[in-house]
Amino acid sequence: MAEMIDASNAAGAISRAVAELRAGRPFAMPTETVYGLAADACNGEAVARIFEMKGRPSFNPLICHVDGLAMAGRFGELPEAARKLAAKYWPGPLTLVVPARADSGVHDLVSAGLGTIGLRCPRGIARSIISAWGGPVAAPSANRSGRVSPTTAAHAASEYPDDDLLVVDGGACPVGLESTIVSVTGDTVTLLRPGAILASEIAEVTGLPVHEPAAADGIQAPGMMASHYAPDALVLTDCTDPPEGTAWLGFGNREAPAGVVAAFNLSPNSNLVEAAANLYAALKLLDVSGARTICVSPIPMEGLGIAINDRLKRAAAPRDREAG
Ligand code: TXA
Ligand code: MG
Image (cartoon, rainbow, N blue to C red; front, side, top):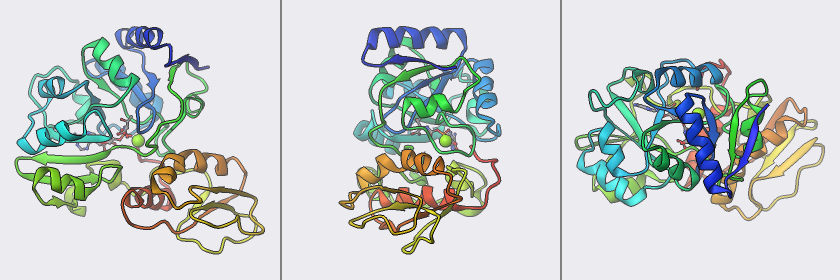
């Protein structure tokens, strides 16, 4: 059973979270993107416990959360372009994958032996917890492997019904989609996972072209894995005519179609920010309706729509349940 602690009681929540970090026990914390399952990045057993709880294959590395550029510099080598991006977007929904510093103390399990490290400075209570702790916090999204990322405390808690998990309850996550992941080596900038910060913005801030990863590069981010973010129901994307008995996930000014058993409109006003923030909670809601199929309206491929379509494509992919 999870124990919830309200983030509005900041001092209490921070001291409980730091106690969990010290004890090597993973706990759930809210960030502006999604809830993370957090533990001391330098404690191998605590990190291994994250993998065990998530049921995540260990080749999938974890993001190391820091409280700013100074702490990031202890663990990664930050090329000029990475510094510019951090200065502009941290704290915020951007993860920078950079060469790892040798002997930084971060456990090898965190970067899965890749020689690089994913660094992110989150907003809000998560950042306060990291500052109070004074060290790096490894935190994947708090879902069990291959499932939808939690965007509320209750959703995070429901993933681990058999664990005594501390959940810091910060309410619904304002962004609702995982961070943009960008790899920066020297002058080469590669978008590994689309998110709220767009490739065009990254190109503008760095003054460099932003590459898409080549398929042959092997696993670099969950964006590389075909099936991910999957509810139990099948997901059909770009669906304008949902058959009877299915669930409908709408977008834009349209009533729920006749004959569907459950319906949710991500944004009747076609607002992509609102749609992103609602996406995972809506998938979760339609999933428990019992419908075998969730039909999703077309979402425009622009701005945040690129990240939303990326997640929906993976939710719709054939399942292997191996993704993180
Ligand atoms: O918004 C987010 O990024 C959330 C919150 C909790 O911060 N975290 C999150 O973590 O989405 P996760 O583990 O579900 O997805 C992060 C992905 C990993 O699966 C991994 O593929 C990629 O980031 N990643 C982490 N370190 C990496 C590295 N060194 N090289 C390449 N990819 C890396
Ligand atoms: Mg994840």
